[in-house]
Length: 435
Image (cartoon, rainbow, N blue to C red):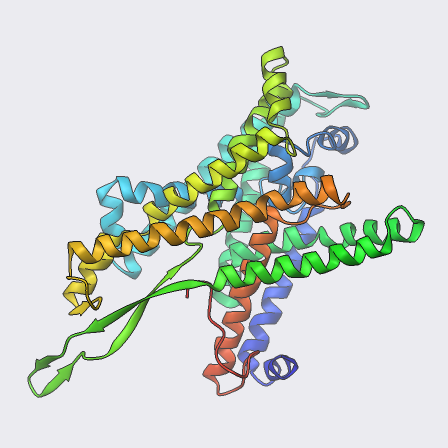
């Protein structure tokens, strides 16, 4: 491991890419502290302190604390993620988009362009909604907006949309000139930035005697074990053996080799957890604006940490794991492509039978992946209620952090191995999250 880090300094291009990535992420963190004009930040902070269990708390996590400060990056990169997911789902429904996605690099560029347009459109809609909502909010220390009106609304929409567009550009620059996926690294940085404060609170509790030191050590061991489990499952995949028949073209012989088709245990990634959280936190958010006994009762029943919330949370995660896997992975297309290339699964007839076999395997391993994601996502409630942990550990944020870290390390190792240097693991190349 130490040798792998030492080898980074011997590759000038890799060193430059890591430096560019670090500098661009610093720019992002600086922008988090630049406030949007026309906002009473003290009044806003008092409001968002009470929004931890709503959709605003989740958005604030992905924005790295920008929503709490209402900075120029308040919307964060969430509009881009939403636009990407919507476009990915529409690719299955709209034949033109499906055809475009199969046209190689040109098609991917076109879809990326549509995603950018969708990001700007969503940012404008969300920015206007936030501006109108802030004008109607009164806090104990005064009005949230100094000068309500169309001037404030237009300025807020322009500021927030520009901030999201800049973050989108920043992520693309990191992807192109730096290391790792830029959008994922921006989310990663925003989540990791909150870890030191949680660690500081824990050390303060141990120091003052409010938390037993043995309990703190037990929590530390549990945290390390959870991270190890996430790494194991994120890299786990089921290998389906594939044999390619021999073909003679002229004087050359093609095929004849054996390979495998890797199916990830967690094919859907962190998307099901995001969808499930958004749906369950929506009633609590509505109840903040519509005060009615029915909305309050629903909000209390679906509050994070309640039994009803956890049951629905697990059910939605399992549902979206199967739904998103079915949308993004088509066994029929895989079987057809395999058949065209002369490949087959030993003991299984090519074509329809192969597609049914792959779908059967995928259905089984997706259940395991859904249970794993559900367990990680309900972990924070268990730690807070049973062990009185003073910070949020687990859930969607931890899945993103570990997943992005694995992807980034895998890319760094690829650069090192390409230039004949040893990577972080001497006994073989580290497998990426995609198998």
